[in-house]
Amino acid sequence: MTVPDQPDQRGAGTLPLSLHQAENLPPGFARSTNVPIIAARFGAGLRPDRLIRAFEAVAARHEALRLRLVPGGEELRQLIADTGPVVEEVPLPGSPTDAELAAEMEQVLGRRAELAVDGPTVARLYRLGNGEFAALFAVTHVAADGWSVGVLARDIAQLYLGNPLPDVEPGYYRRYVREQHDLGPALTDRQAEFFRASLAGVPAAPLRRDLPVEPAAAYRSVRRPLPTDDAAAVYRLAQRLRTTPAKLLMAATFLALKDYLGQDAFAVLDVSAARSREQVDWAGLLSKGVPVPVRAPDGLAVGEFVAGVHRHSLRGLSMLAGPYSLRRVLTLLHEGGQAPAADALYRRLWTAEVPDAHSVMFNCLTIAPPSQAPFGAEVEYRPLYPAEPLAPEKNRISDLDVLPLIDGVSISLGITAHPAVHGDADVERVLSAIQGVLTGWAHGWDGDRRSGG
Image (cartoon, rainbow, N blue to C red; front, side, top):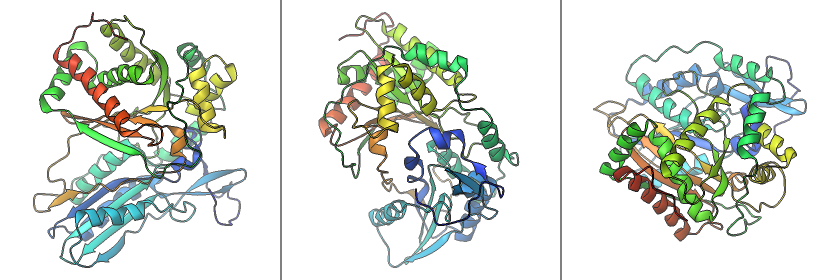
């Protein structure tokens, strides 16, 4: 990232980047990806000044939403601005369609913010010529993630309605960053031992098709909701097995990938959020990618496999405290030379080598069910779905993302894939395989059944 000429600000009240801002993913990705918080059309009943105040109050509540990235010697540092973002009001003549509004928002999201000056938020209120409104509130990934934006959207709606929010401890973000900085440069012995043992010998998955040198302008994305009775059956099975729907989705994904990748051992990067749903001091505490080994030999009982996925996931989450970062784990395994899958992921994310193995990401997001009228019964509210801009660095991070969404009592399956590596038929194949495994378990569970070839 290029920043304007400014004095070196190692002092002057600046903070280092948090461990996860600096080391969890290639740096350019987090600083060039804008994630929508609210992208919606509102009827004429909206009180726009109240919506603006609600957004500004949420931005004032969290220091991470007011950060600036400034020069600080050899690395960037962050400075917390005293004032929050200003909502830009934009008139749009006539009555633009939802598609036209989404296209306008996509252009705004695609502009790479200058984080030394602008901060990490995007805030626009559109006044439409027909008396209606639209709003785009977004945040750069360096300050929030998919979990965070769901909480942000909820908080904006609650403040719009005049409802109080839980108190946030003052200075929690600064304390979090400093505590991380004081953890030192290395994993603990316990963390190192866990990842060495769990990923030892796990092979890389060779690319089905070469990854082009030129980054893809867009990934192929498909989402498919599960029928209501299937989703209900998944919930019942999770309760019966004393696990969670997310863990069942993870296990079903792993078996589907076994068939697709053509090998029974590989690794997946799990970036599901590891925070409490009720946590309020979350902004800036980014999700932590965890390399997860998959071992599913033919003949393994599916009950044993699902239980193993559950146990290993919980053990992996227990390793995220302290000086954990994805880069530290992958560097350790790369230097050890005994974990081919982790070594391939290290070379893909942090070297200029041409990738020769798949990088598969699993990110299951669990959110509270949305209100049908989040801004009150008198305000017509219609979400829009602008395509999020694709940072060039994404091409190296992963070529296949599995993105389940658990939304209250509903479940949907999502796939995002590099179009040159995974064709339309490939995406449908993986999606259908995950759905088939999951619903087959949900309606006819037999833990003693053996996994096939």
